[in-house]
Length: 114
Image 1 (cartoon, one colour):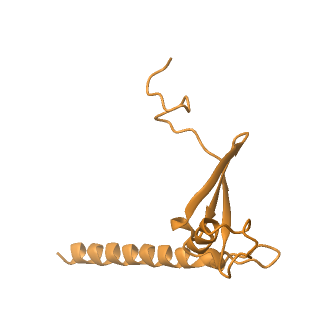
Image 2 (cartoon, one colour):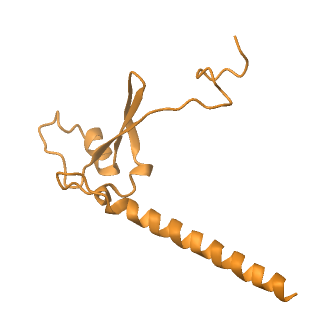
């Protein structure tokens, strides 16, 4: 009985340690800065921004995202209407290299070999 309770305590301790490490890793994401000083924290919430454009260059895929302030400015006609972009308008471009999934090795989404 005593051995079992020690095992439970160890398991709970390891589980809580893993949760704490994950929480700290998520917080560190916004501490990243690029060499010219632009901070990743300036783009907090970009995951929910609207996709404006996507492109593919060879094997790389890119998406341009705009925050709600930028979308509102575009809908109002900026920059063609002669007005400047409002404060807080932001764009972000994300690049990634796709990897083939084992479940779809052909890469075209087909389930069965041709």
